[in-house]
Amino acid sequence: PRSLAVDLGRFSGPVSARWYNPIDGRFTSVAGLPLANVGTREFSTPGDNGAGENDWAMVLEVERDR
Image (spheres, helix red, strand yellow):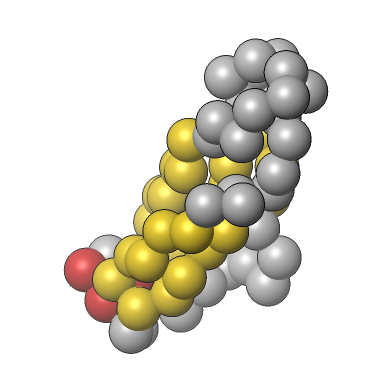
C-alpha cells in the first residue's frame, strides 16, 4: 500500500474521507468518521483496486450539518 499524510487542521470542520477506485467508480470509506480537523493523519491505500494495481484517489470533504 501507499501512504499519504494530510494536515486535517487545514479544514474548517470535521472531515469525511474515502478512497475512490478509478477502475470501477466505487468509493471505500475510511474508518472512524468523521475525522476531527486537528493535526496530521496518515492514510494508507486499500490495496489492489481490482486491476492488480494500487491506484486510488483520496476524497476529503468537510462534514456539513444535516
